[in-house]
Length: 210
Image 1 (spheres, rainbow, N blue to C red):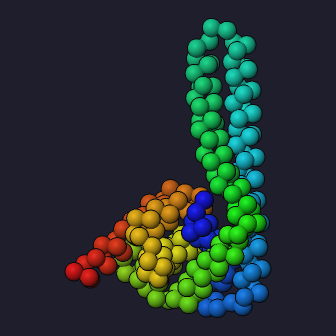
Image 2: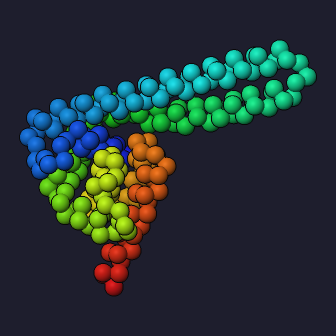
Image 3: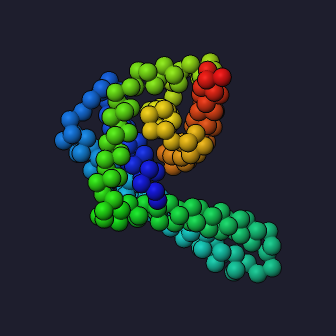
């Protein structure tokens, strides 16, 4: 997992613990929130892995039950579908878990200071410019208000704008990684909303430049 992606995810988890009215926090407060974010990230993947294991166990039991019903094609087909879905879910979880387990390794090595520094920078940029960020996002919401979105979606969007405008991250990278965060922490509706808002924001910025 790249330092940028890791620092963005940590920043998101820290921001989710900050009050909406916070404009600045002490270094000590941010460090405490960062540690909670690390703990939260690891707990998240433990819970997802547990759910995946339970699904696989159910699929395995269904497969065993179906073997007792010899010649029953109708009984076997749903089991195969269930098993296929469970294996797909397991693959996704293991991929995420692999990335998550990279986290303590990175933080234990030379990248520790860099990852935390980048996360802190992103957090402070959002806190310092939140009213301006929200105004920009509201301007491209198309009949919706940013304040009506779930908190996690608002923070994903704010971090993406910070990436685009303050950290000069390429637009395709910033948008793709925002969608990746939505895949992990939001839902399908949130993912579509985030993708659409960022696309309109980029179009508006391009028109302003031209």
